[in-house]
Image 1: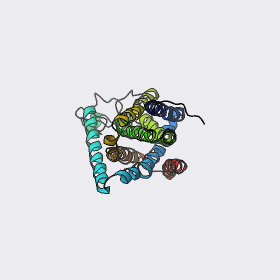
Image 2 (image 1 turned 90 degrees about the vertical axis):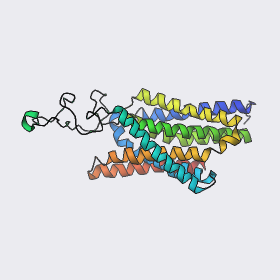
Image 3 (image 1 turned 135 degrees about the vertical axis):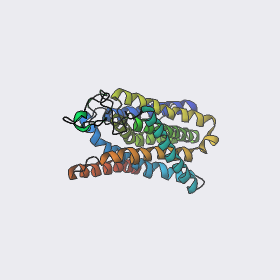
Image 4 (image 1 turned 30 degrees about the horizontal axis):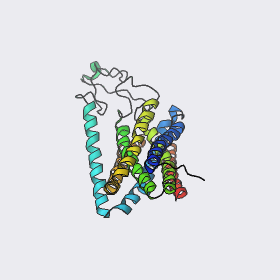
Length: 298
C-alpha cells in the first residue's frame, strides 16, 4: 500500500483528530441507540469496562514507563483524594441547607412529593420524607430529588477521560516521529481500545443525568485532548514523555474513584438474586471486552 507523502505533523493532526472523532462516534452509535430503560442496568457493564481499563491497560503502562512503582502508587493515591475533594465541592455547590439531593430530610414546602398519610398534623414533625421512586432516567429533571447524582460521576469521568485522551495523542505523535507506518498502526490500536471505554463513558454520563446530546458533545470535546496531546508532543516530545506515567496515574484514579465510590454503591440498592447475578455478569463482560481488545491489539 502506498502511503501519501504528508509531513509528519499533518499525519499527527489527521490521526489524532480523526481517531478521537471516530472512536467517540462509533461508541455513541452503540450507546445512544440503546433503550433508555436499559441504561441503569448497563451501568454494570460500564463499571467493568472502567475497572478493566484501569487494571489491564492504564496502570500496567504507567508502571512500565515510570521511574518507580512507588511514584505511580503515590500519584494514584493523590488522584483518589483529589477526586474525593472535587466531588465534595460539587455536592456543596448543589446543597442549600437541608434541601439537598444528597440529604434525606426535606422541608414540606419545598418537597411536595411525600408519603401519603404522613402529614405534619399526624407526626408534629417539621420535615416529611420523600416518597420512594423506582430508579429511572426516563423522566426529565422535573423534581430536584431525582435519583441521578447531578452529573458528579459524569463530570469526573470526563476529567479522567481527558487525561487519558491527552496521553493517547502523545503516544500517536511519538509513534509517527519514529515511522509513519508505526504511527498508523498505533492510531488504529488506540481507536480500537478506546471504543469499549467510550461506550462505558456514554453510559455513565446518561446514568448521571445528562441528555444524549450532552453526552455526545462532552465526549467529543474530551476527544480533542488527543489532538492537543499530539501537537504538544510533536514540539516537545522529550519533555512531555516524562509526564506520561503520572498523567496515566491520574486517569486511572478518576476511573477507579467513579467506579468504586459512585457507581458500585448504587448497585447495592438492588439486592434480589436475579439483579445481583446480572450485575456480576455485566461487570465481567465489561472487563472481558477490555481484555479481548488488549489481546487483539497485542
